Amino acid sequence: SVQSMQPIFVGDVQGCSEELEELLGRARDAYGSRFELWLVGDLINRGPDSLAVLRRVRELVDSGRARLVLGNHEIGLLLTAALLTGLLTRPQPSLHVLWDMVIPLLPATFLLSPMLWRNVCPLATLNQLTGRGRGARLRGDALEWAWVLGILLLFALVPARRFLFNEHGAILAGTIAAVALLSAAGGLVFSRR
Image (tube, rainbow, N blue to C red; front, side):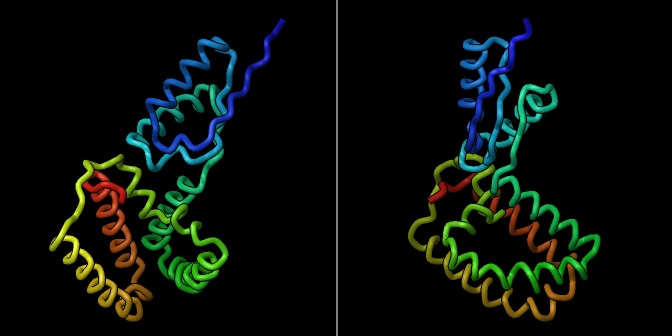
């Protein structure tokens, strides 16, 4: 008789590749090859090796051993990639969607669910995607200068929206990409808190 596959549902792997491998080992011990992994979102983020998790899940899905539902972190990264692609290839419609539709809705999302932005912000995801970091922290004068630099950048970039970011998709895409790379690099060096 044909034996049915045992579904195993897993959520929030969060970049923990060792734990995923341990789970797969336990599943093999219990069911042999008669199991199918159902991953229900948030493969990436907080853990030490999100890229290894993505590679492993890709192997499992491609071999028919797993099914995948994207989580908010994956969707946030895909939306960021789509935005950057749009800004470079179709700047005017992309600028319209970003500035006239998405940005005006953000305050409402903050009001309805303050934690929503933390869970979909691509910069937060990129910062944590790179791993746990080396645990470094800014202290004393360096921390104060970082705050000053952040405020100065805010005062420089907000007015630049009118004459620069509203009109030039490639410049906005480059700025977003640069900030994303800095965020990812920060995740390699600094602790999350």
